[in-house]
Amino acid sequence: MVPFPPAATEAGFGALTRAGLLPAVTGLLGRDDVVPFTEGSLPVYAVGDDLVLKLYPPLYRDEIATEHTMLEVLSGTLPAPGLKDAGERDGWGWLLMERLPGRTLKEAWPSLSTEDKQRLMPELGELLATLHAIDDPRLAVIPPADWTEFVAEQREKAVDHHRRTGLDEAWVAQIPGFLDAVDLGTPPVVPLHTEFMRDHIMLDDGRITGLFDFEPAMRGAAEYDFVAVGLFVTSGDGDLLRRFLDGYGQPIDERRCLAYALLHVYSNFPWYLKELPPAPTLDALATAWWGS
Image 1 (cartoon, rainbow, N blue to C red):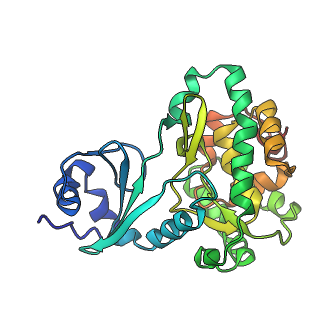
Image 2 (cartoon, rainbow, N blue to C red):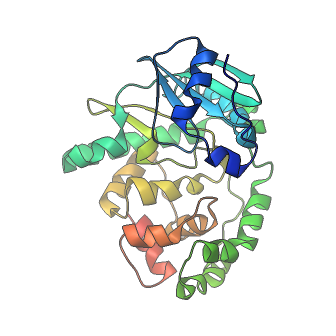
């Protein structure tokens, strides 16, 4: 049986290809009908027509516990991949899941009519509200252990993070003052997807069939999930966001959403500013991207 490579460093993992891992994957599963997906940060494979295998190299082994727990908790509560099997081999972790039918909302989006998009928004809002309403003691293992401490740590390194992304200094200079002026308070802690975007929502014949990719899940303020909603689902379209919120059932604070966008683990403002409606200041961006 072909072993999995070590992949214990960024360089080691980055040198691997999904096709190159296929001999180890087929040996693990004992079947040959395995095809790699091209999307995603971790290696993922279609297994026949009904299953998906996701691999977690030694470098990212901690993430398997988060996704494993989330899928167990979500079973029967929210449309998500059903967990079929899990295990470890050669230092790698793996999950075998049911494959959600259809194609991603990202793939379908260009072919959807304005009416289709408007109809989907309340349904997507209901889907996110269902996730945020889940209260299960098993979620206690999902990071961070302390949301307030996490936010403080992100705040401390925010300026350095945005400089590293190449954000123009005129924007960087606004960040400390904006964050100081936004009261994030001590909100209730809820389960978060953290990447609730078109890429992770499946659609089949115009019907939402599920939400997937839970390895970056967290527990924290609900508005942290609206970072991805505003940027990657409604993309600055106030009418679509209003319809999404109609389904979600609660309002959001646009300035807190922008604050969480600045503090988000995967924040990349140079990309956002290139792809989304422009505005001259951070306050104006909050309205342009999360105003409904």
